[in-house]
Image (tube, rainbow, N blue to C red):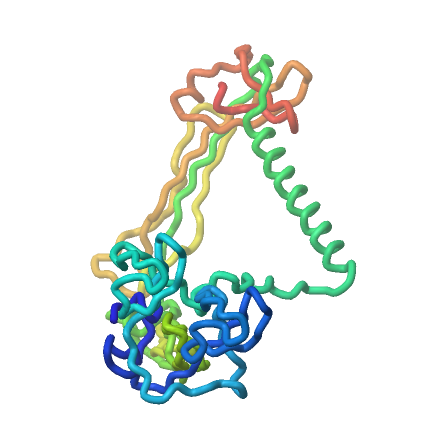
Length: 347
């Protein structure tokens, strides 16, 4: 028997051989006289009116009404005659009603496949509140989302919506800074396998680093499987159950000697002669605790401008542009429509 004969379920029997598990008769109701609960194997025709059994009318009986088939030999699913529509046993090479050959005929549709197609979709998750509250909550959330989107769009507009204006250069200023770094003992923590090699005073503790999915048993149910020949069998269908388990690892707290940010040396002025601040830092011949060095340097060049409305603005520009802009110079600039700020990139 091919896998299509039993829906691909395990425990199937080969054609011409019995199934390994018990086999029971399907039920069917006569469409012509109304006779009910006729047996799929015993009653190939209605015992009241003689009508042929309709394989598409077969259904699974309740467990308490199951009728076992003894020594049932499986010959495959029944087939439909393409000429007269009569259902025939798979072992019949010609239709028992009109004599049409079996070749090219389709096998009957199985009851468990029909039931799976009719199964309702999964139920939606329960709402957070009952009655009309859920609708109100969704309305409020919807309004909130619209408000957030509106704020984002407003922010984008305020950044890029500008208009032409003029401005006059009023003054220049500058600020130069140097970060002073000190080689000192600093505390740190992190996963022990990524701890600095020169760390000391190390303490370890267990901490969750990740999770893993682990199977914990399974949930099983009994499923009816239509054999397609007027019989059915019952198979166990099991789904594994999984849980999330924490993965623990060593987490370390430690001390390590390294360069850290200390004081910030700063120099500023309102002229055109910027200069770096004096740090009075002397380099160590050998790096040790307490050593100092000059770190990151930062330079800002600012011009103060007044727009046509009399509002003043401070703009940070490159040093070359800063030096090129003379006090009293009149410029065409772009001004933000929302907020009134000056677009310093237009200078």
